[in-house]
Length: 194
Image 1 (cartoon, rainbow, N blue to C red):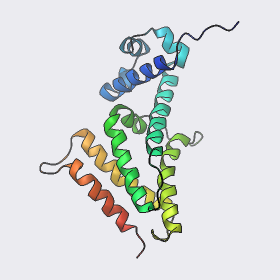
Image 2: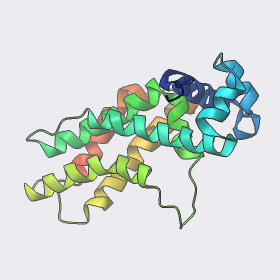
Image 3: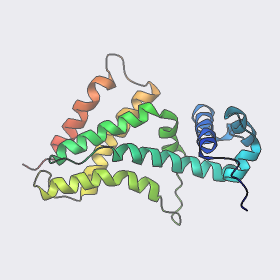
Image 4: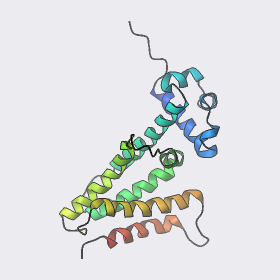
């Protein structure tokens, strides 16, 4: 007879959320397995059982952040207007960042530049945007360049504005919440075919 599972997915998610909050607020160096366990109201045994060690916990944290981000982007259903789909993906980008700022920050702070370890999770989060642009190109809506070029530009505008908003570095008199959608719309319009 198999042993019953002691630590379920709910405990795993609590540990990941606690770790994300610690890393977001105080950095990776402040993260200890004992502290994560205490913040998640469980034992260090749960951390070791589910993740093994700190490095594995951090890797799982990054994967969870990108998984949740990809899941949020996947809620944007394709329509007959790919240009509008690109805009809606940008709005979903901001929504995820504002709803889950700890994990949003994790996606960018825990990435590795190891060429032997391709970041497939991060690449998958760009895919819905690239696909919407490809559909737009097929329909003659976007200029004929590599769709990844357009995706990078749109992603850059979204990421830049969201980062400014989350850090509170918005210059006086400006409001990202008000200007975010018009900025995205202008970016998308700039890539439309004449």
